[in-house]
Amino acid sequence: MKTQLNNNQVMQLRSMIRVALQHCDRSVTPNFCQMLSSPESYKKAESMVLNYAIKNEVSIGAAISQLESEMT
Image (cartoon, rainbow, N blue to C red; front, side, top):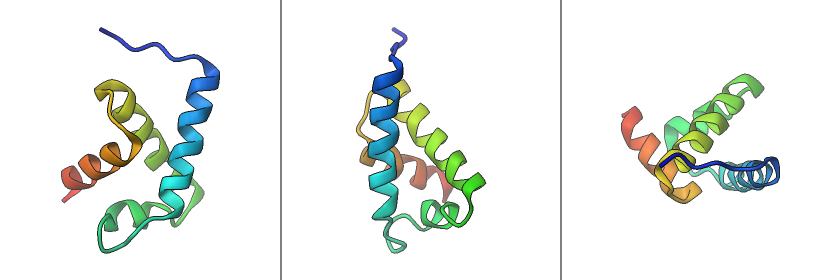
């Protein structure tokens, strides 16, 4: 089943992602922390987390953790 979100829901998720990435811990998620070094790579990280969380119906934290594990 494909999850459909409205614009407000997507904006809320983006806000949650921003907060999570602002508290990036290099000892836990070094690849994601590295992606925050430029606006372009931040947008890529945000998009990856957003898509993963929606597709897999998981929390933002779980999406970041899983994506980080796939990068190593």
